[in-house]
Image (tube, rainbow, N blue to C red; front, side, top):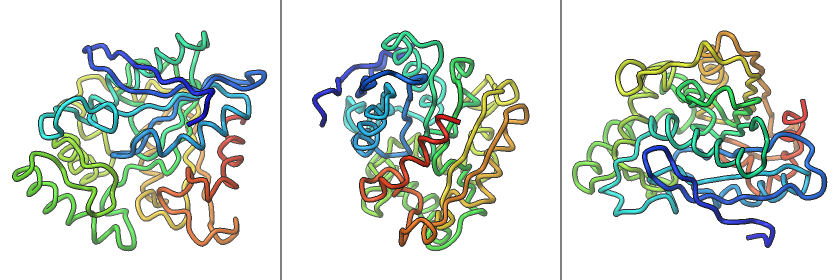
Length: 286
């Protein structure tokens, strides 16, 4: 952890507290602050090296744990009532407000990894978002998956999640290398949202009453790798079509051309792939 970073708590509208890490811009701040929203089951620690690097480039940065994950889990996992809908309607808006208060900025740049970049359409503070950069951002629709994940996902959704939720009281993901174990409602909604095209659109009228997708006009860029088995081209297009009035952009990274064996769904934020970080930063500046 860097000396410059500051641990803070985010207070959500419903009283829930989220653990966060704030990195002040080093040198002259040259843009809106950047809010990093993690992927499903991935803790804030995963993004520290990238956040630190971004702050060295002159950006104020904040990263946090969604409720029920990492340091934002305040009870035994099986008691957690967190949901993906909570992440989009309560956690991300509270994180935006906290970052704006902290920096005095008017808007944030939302840099979302996977699920972290898929929830703007249910976020009541969408007008406070200057732009979205969705890294490995797609709907994750099961029919659009490829490779091993195409085989593994149905097993995870239809066998592992229901059985582990019943026996252990949570969605077991750690043992298959899919991040932290998940609160059971998160696991249930993940399955539901990925079973049909449109991801969180499938919750509208059920667990979500407000739908902002068509109001959103900020630019949305999805950066994905050609070897990503989840954010495939078909699933990236499926996400961007949800925002009919936003200026959307797709950037495909080909690992071999960039000197990497693999990038996939997770490696873009790892130190081993820091050569890719300026490509993400270019989109912030664009």
